[in-house]
Image (cartoon, rainbow, N blue to C red; front, side):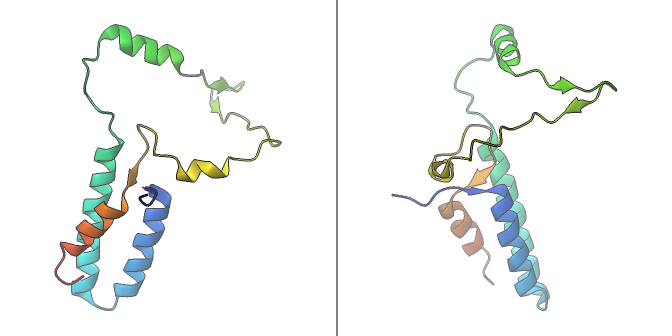
Length: 120
């Protein structure tokens, strides 16, 4: 069993901690910054849906129709959908594979990218 994917907010906290640890050494700080930039770009690539089928106007229309319409306040601004407070989030959500379109990186991607920097 592999480690769960690292979501963007957790990755950003990890990257901030690495920056704090290396801020007194310019070469190390730059190495962490380069690796962090590559990992951010890699997460963006993981976020894109797989293009294994042709996207037609019909499929785009159906996808748009499936999206919930945002609630509009009296001023015409979209409002945040209210969440039911009685339903706690599922603890198994963190162990599920990432949904298509969600930014994440794997442990293997993190390690491989960090290890490409000779100073790290």
